[in-house]
Amino acid sequence: MKIFLSVFLLCFLVTAALAQAQQPAPDSPEALKQRNEQMQRRLNDWPQLSRYREANTKVAPPAKDENRVVFYGDSITDGWKLAEYFPNKPYINRGISGQTTPQMLIRFRPDVIAHKPKVIVLLAGTNDIAGNTGPMTLEMIQDNYASMAELAKANGIKFVFASVLPIHDYNPQRKQSERRPPEQILKLNEWLKNYCAANGHTYLDYFSKMVDDKGFLKAELANDGLHPNAEGYKIMAPLAEAAIQQALKKKK
Image 1: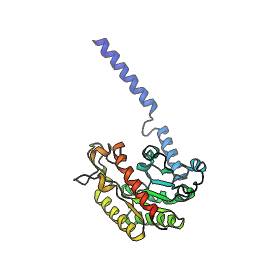
Image 2: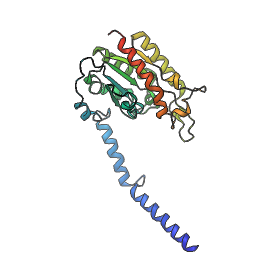
Image 3: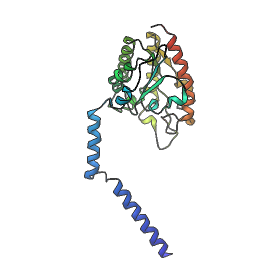
Image 4: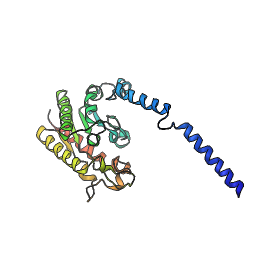
């Protein structure tokens, strides 16, 4: 028994030592170097223009009568496998995980306008509310929405504004409401709905189809309380397609 415990203890210590060797201590020179390099990369390309730079060069001009659509946004768009949910559709994904509307505004020309889509579907705002790139008021978010809409209109692109998705706190390890208060999401969605109505844009209401009776995202639609799982995307896909078709019918 003593031999077994000794062997077990030795294995445990070796495993721990290897883990420490692979993961630098929080305040070690190597860890500090890694953080500094990561910070420098972010400063060098804050809007992440390089993310799709190469991919953009490979996108051909739209074919005649092609109803090209760009899906634009943050991680919820980034993680959406468009070819799976919209087979044989000329839809382009230009989502970037963690992004906020000021970052999206900066990369709007190379990642949206340059592809000459007929429609853009924008899903954004949740990371602005969370303060991913610093504190943001609702008015600041709204200004960025409006700026992107004006750029799209100037280039003959129809605009679909998606509602910000609800969040949930059903995962005890991730209290999403601490950074994304539901009341802020409701206020932003109300503004979006009114802005679309006043300016001839299409409002895509994911929220009401995905919220439960407590005002949270339905638990079965997202494991972490924020990012839709396959069941969540199954609900979103037909709603997005209906909004795209509605936008295509609008006059310029």
